[in-house]
Structures are given as structure tokens and as C-alpha cells.
Image (tube, rainbow over all chains, first blue to last red; front, top):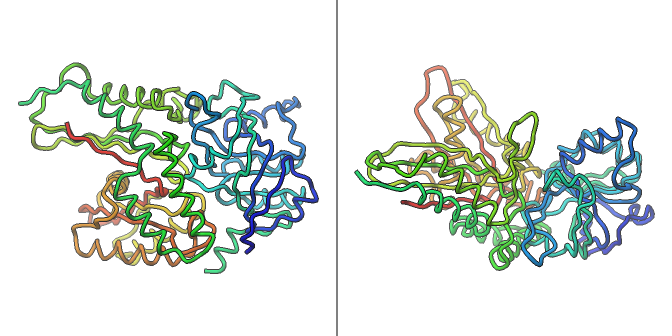
Length: 183
Length: 280
């Protein structure tokens, strides 16, 4: 496992994604979009109705996160990852539309694995339960869609050195699986 | 007979909502410190350091420890010599949660109907468990429960023939399955015995028990120690990224049960096992 920190810019370039390996410790800088359960459901409904999505997915990274409210003068409240598997039902379709990366925590389904490899994408984990620490890497936050969903709205985040670990790389290697099979 | 105005309940609940979501209780800090010294994996140690740093930032900057500030679980032990006045106790508790979550900048994570799922916007209602006890005091325990770990919890209706080995296997299976989803290092609350709902409730109560004391029943205390050792040999590690420290503690509560049954509930909690208690 590589312990050196890799620093990469968002949106993700395909040649950069190719270099990321399961177990890599990475700092992300650039734009992320948040979406969790309710926003995914809305996006799927839009796709079913053949409507445009409220954000472009091309090369972008979705962060599965619903923040706590920001105190005055701060961009955001506590902002750690939620469990990714609840988004599994919706994820393959989004990857096929150009989504390049996801940040969450926990295992993914077989169909998400396949869609990651098929689209040369990447799944990162951020540390669950470290929302105060992670909020310090978020420079700005703005609701860009589904405002009525409150914490579940889609937010555009500007992040700087946001710490994540590569869990599933574009070749389909899975850090959680290798951890489980080593024991 | 002592008279107690329920507005004091509202005030206490409100304060505990804010306190528990920003400061871990001393028992949790204690086991986290111990775990940080025991982790051998480099990445695991790095994650544990991040968790310690996260706790410092949460307390200093008043940012919730975790963005999932939970569904509010309240244990209300009401002395039978107390006369509550000024309104309904239940309403007073909900009002405390409402004020705490709004004034404390806590996330509102509750939907009013499990199917239609519209957010109630103030994190009410709370889930309240009452107990009538002796005396003239009211003891309130507030436990915000996050759902990353709650979703990985289980009830097993084992057979008497499964015995203690069956209980161990059930607990280990639940922890293995929870893996990285439950934000390890976890805290595990277990209820053994009673009925279907009694064991589930005991597993929640077990999470609120101090994590550094152990059960007062000798064989249960040994079981807790044995299971913690076994869990910490699973290799899941901090963040599920590999390492020794998969669990910080396991608390087991027991109760008599039926000749035909051996119910076991495993309530999984993450490392942010939040609880606060006030006696009025």
C-alpha cells in the first residue's frame, strides 16, 4: 500500500484516474457535488422522464454527504461521508452518463463495481465520523439543485486538499476486499 | 411527593442535544485514547489520529463531531414520587429536541412518514423509552443515534441449543457484515434474552452504559472481553481500511427469557457513541 499522499485536481482527467490504485491516500482540490439518497432518487426520476439532470456529470465527482447547518461566517457545518451502498441502485446509470468518481464510505454492489471498471471511474472513501475535520477542507458551498430537500439538496463544494483513500480503482481492485481476504 | 415543572425537562434535553453532539463523554475518550496506542497498521493509526483531531475541532469550533447528528433517543427514568406539572412530559421532551437541533446548528435527519419521507425540519419526534422507578427524581439520558451504524444492527432469534457459542457467532457475524459501513472502530451494544423487542431495547441501553466498566455479572464481563478480542482479530480496522482496532468496546445486557428461545440483538454504533445524562 502506498502511503505517500497524491494530490489531484478536480474535475477528474481520465489519465489521472488510470494512475490511482486501491489503497492510495489522495488529497482532492477543486469542485465536488454533493448528492445523497433523496437527490439520487430525483435524478433517477429526471432520467426516467427523459429530462436533463440539474448538474453535468462529465468528469465530475459526487460526494455522498448531507451537512449539518453552517454557523455564521462558515461555509458549511459538519460534512463527513454517508454510507455509499444506499446509492448503489442509482449509480451505474450515472457512471454511464460520465460520472468519474464518488466519495462515500462502505462497500459497493457488484453492478457498481462493473460500472466503475466499464467507465474507468474511481470510488474513494473519506473517514466516516470525522465531519468536523473534513469541513475544514471545504472552502465554499452553494446549493445548486433541489433546495427543498434541505440537507439532501445538491451542493457545489470548492474543496482544498480534501483527504480520501482510493477504495475501488478503475481496474476494479477493491481495498475493502483485500483487507477482508487478508484475515 | 415532589413537584417538577416539565419546562426543566425541555431545558435539559435541549442542552444535552448540543453537548452530546460536540463533546464525547469521558468514557469514550478513554477507550479511543487506548485504541490509538494499540493500532499497529500505519493507515489505521492515521485514521485514529484524524478521529482525535476531529474531536478537538468539534469542541473548539463547535462543529458537530459527525454531520449525522442522529435521531434523538431519550431514556426517561421517572421516579414514582414525582408529580410532573406544566404540560405533558412527552411534549416537553420533543420540544427540547426541537430547540436543541435548531439552536445548536444540528442536522435535521428525521422524516415524518417512513414511506412518504418528508423532513420534519426540526428533528422531531424523538424515540422515547420510559421507565417508572423509585424515588422523586427524573433521570434523562439523551443518545443521538446515527444511521450508518444503526442500519447494520441485527436481531437474531436463536434456539436454546445454540447456547453461548451461538451467541458469539451471531455477534461476530453482525460485526463482519457491518464492516466499513458502520464507521469502525465501532461500539457494540448487545441484548441477550427477554423477548424480540426487549433484547433490542437492551442492546440500545447497553450502548448508553459506560464503555470502560464492563458488566457487573462475571460471566458476561468475560464474554465482553473475549468478544472484543475476537472482533479485534477480524482485521477490519479503523475506517474499514485494515488494522487491529475494529471495535472500541462491547457492552452486553441480559434478561431472563422463555424456555423456547434465546433472542440476541446487536446494536452497532460507530466511534461517535454519544450519550449525556442529567438528573432532575
